[in-house]
Image: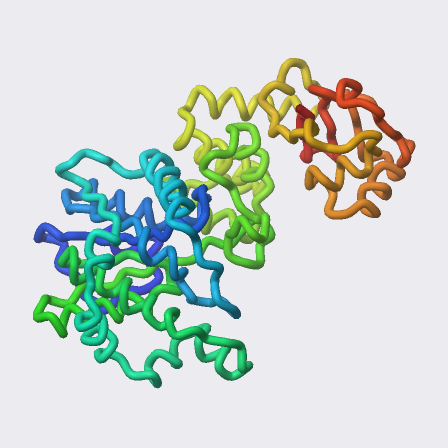
Length: 383
């Protein structure tokens, strides 16, 4: 069954009766304003349960986000304001609509402040008494921080307990999470037992490796594909996914039959890019973007520049050198690398190759709406 096989890293306990209606929980803390493809792995699994008739319960961690999940962190997360959390939560919901079925009979959406903000001190002490300090220090992240003598603040210990209490509040039968969430999901099972409820099952999905091919997808590492990326930008990123990751991207991010993938690695990358752009923007847009990307690779820009990822030059200080724009826009990782790319003949501006690393612009109007290109695939429009 696709629910319990494709894209599932662990199921505990190992048995799950899907013949009865399940309440399937997924919690998301709105710590950033946007989602990326890494977030969609769990969202897609939740949608699969919806399609099989189960009730999806999406928890927006507006209360827990103010603490921040300490999992895998070497230091305390910065605490967010209520306004920041509220803004992020709204953008999360807007983007989750691209994946989940929001029909009332298929989805419940709850802010966990509904119940967590009402807990009195007696209840909090009761919850905290369910876990020992030794158990908490065994959690990944806490153990490493303790051994390195990095500060661990007492409020951080509350995070897994409060996330676990979410499962009690909504009477979860199954909780979906990344492989880094096993401890937190297990806490939910323990708290359900404490309060006399049947214990939820934990279903863990793999963490999506980012475009760098090394670390998990993250905005802070700039190895991500955002759900709000423009079609062309999304396509260009995905058609460059490392060969070693292509099959896992197909497995976790699409419904593509893995036995029917093209044998040629380059064709696989193109199919991956087109498939995912189709999911978010429709088949017609995906086909057009694929053709436009091919034209760009061949140097036939035409009118395609209007669909390129954009970089704003409006707030930059002039005069400004070209190598600085390359660095600031992210086309090159540093000023020195930008100079090397220019000197090596890899940079084009307005379709013309640039060879002077000290080329300077005195006013924005000189380069407004110009297409800037490094190599064949790194292309932006300056706005």
